[in-house]
Image (cartoon, rainbow, N blue to C red; front, side, top):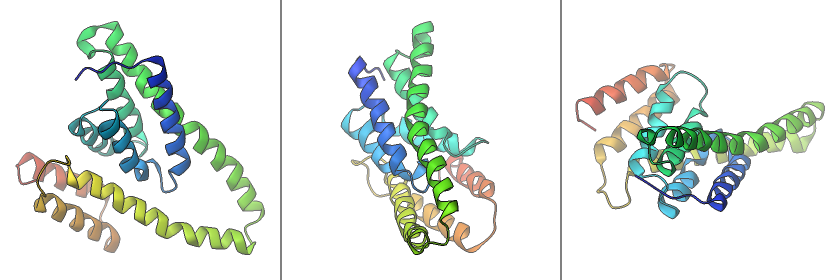
Length: 198
């Protein structure tokens, strides 16, 4: 997939990730629905397959959860640079995409987290601080459910896939009710995908 990104498009990409950073209350993964809307639906800088594969690959890899942001940015840059076969231009734009996405996602959230945690720790006994912490829990759960919905539904044109939905629901229940490590669930999902069951 080849796309053309102007300077204002790169700035728009950076600004979008700045905004998403401020919304990533439960982690960057909770912004996946809005990220999908912006990158796939609105601008067509990524295909749905590239988007979903970026998240799956980054989640399967060891390291921080936020790696998928770099991979999504990498793929936007890769599409803008004509692919790795385009030599130095392809590599440079791919790295630029990863850098723009990660910088946009990390700058506001890191700054806000540092300032807010210092303030919250100093004022942890205040009623408002305790109420804020309790009120954020349902918001995070709702954002995670929305993320699961985007990953399960696939393309807007594709038919409903009950097998994929069942895997998502079973995984959610296992995580919620047991202490099974997430890598076992990722391995089971990979096995189901490799066999063509989902």
